[in-house]
Length: 363
Ligand SMILES: [Zn+2]
Image 1 (cartoon, rainbow, N blue to C red):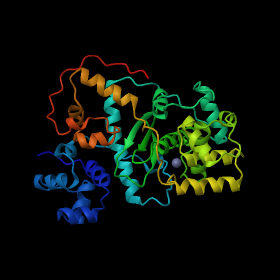
Image 2: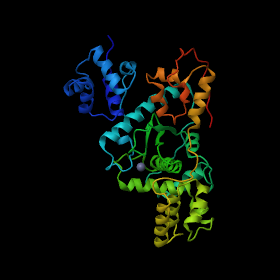
Image 3: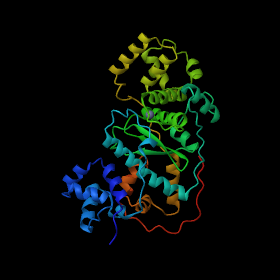
Image 4: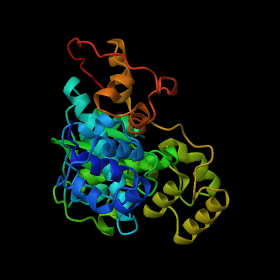
């Protein structure tokens, strides 16, 4: 009989945001037994593993595959750490771990861009943003696509499963490669800002993995604002004392949220405190606090799109990839910005054939 891989049971349970008690209630298996399985002290029978797989919504095969290490808590920057419940953090961390399984699979088959993210600890965030821009040859120009930019500089970007609602984004490292996971259940402008925020963590906070308090969050936000809306470019746009309408008209230049631009104008002293508050009240009334009316098109991964395309050309479908990873395509799709066409979901998988030599991906 196959042996249950205890680390996979843990990842699957946390991915679904379930406590041992909740899983026990759903399956009728005692907490004591579940705990023993997770600690590898007891082997469940086939019927029990089947029941667990069904309750957790993972293919049975997932639980028999190789051991997986968890992403250490301290390797992740979470926004609003104190406010996010532990089970939500665990769910996001486990979703991230599943994205890493896919990342490892891709890295084995494709040569992705080499990482080029400078580490600038103890640097003023605004200065650090300017230094990264200079290194990447961006000048003061607006950034058309943050995800493509990150990928071109070797950051691996995945989407955070939609059910991780309380976690905006997080970043970590894997085998020397920076990784960013983005919650895509929000406005495209917010996701762009989150991407720049996570870049801020990678640049400013990678070296010293202390628990990240409000200071680190502030620094990452300042980095993001400076990176997306460079000081000199904003100053050149005649936005001194800008009205709400003017802000709404100009935010498209940097593809940022109206609130983010208003905040940046305050930061650069182009709005008084009173002017800033007035704009914020007006924007709130028009619905710009919780969403971004008439917003930009969401960004998505270029690398993943190319990978899927290259694989498909060789006859490998997303269902084959999911099968290799012991996942179903619905789960896989949660981590890849929904790039897998829905029509393919649930489609029969073909047996992967011998692959020709691997394609070089260039962004
Ligand atoms: Zn953060």
